[in-house]
Length: 40
Image 1: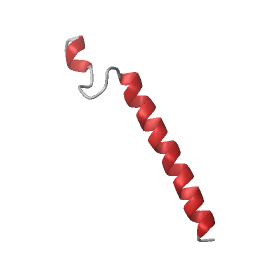
Image 2: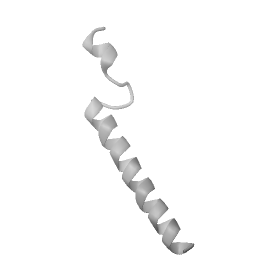
Image 3: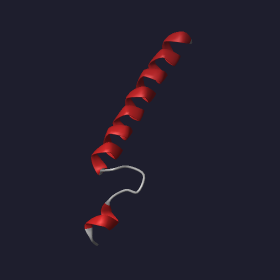
Image 4: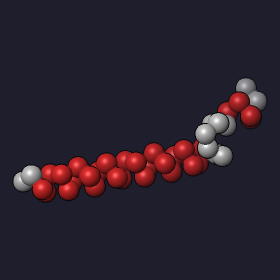
């Protein structure tokens, strides 16, 4: 595969994809924590 085929079409680089995944995971963790605290 050439370099152009490896780049994700929705983001400029794979680093942005990884950053988005990390941000989503952190938001899920905080969301579940606050959900747990609210219904404790």
